[in-house]
Amino acid sequence: MPDTDAPLGALPNSARLWVFGASRPLAPGEEARLLAEVDGFLEGWKAHGHPLAAARDWRYGRFLLVAVDDRVTPPSGCSIDALVRRLKGLEEEFDVDLVGSAPIWFRDGDEIRRVSRPDFKALARDGEVDAETVVFDLSLTRLDALRAGKWETRAAESWHRRYLD
Image 1 (cartoon, one colour):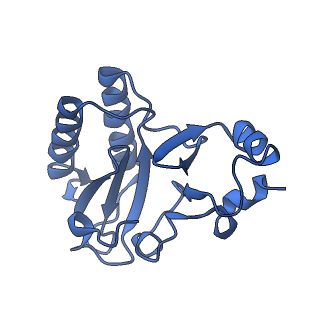
Image 2: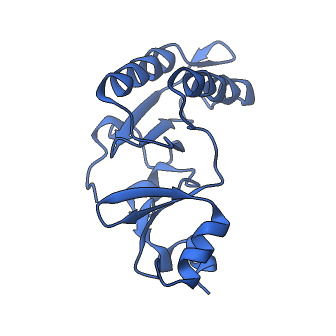
């Protein structure tokens, strides 16, 4: 598990956070283009005409983390919608899902897998995932939770445990 969030390091623990997962690994050229597009968007990202203090990170070649210091300028609904619209445009360009929040992400050995919630429950029933399975919580909303290790954690320590019955 990463112990640093260098690109996000200048932002305070209270920063607002969004985590997006790419439905498939991106080729190196796709990854570079995606990150360049996101960086360009974040450089000009504003709420009601005021620049947002934002940063991003890219982890494991699958996860885009975007954070905003909302003490400087809080993001507005319209500015958040603009981010989601830009990511949806990139989804089309790269034929990859980024914005969907329903899948469950977990480690299966060295592989990062993305499955539906019913499929995760079935994997638990069949003993293929359990309380020790490392899961990714894309529902985090604050940088302090990421820094506290709640993004990548054992299923027993996350909301994912409800599927382990």
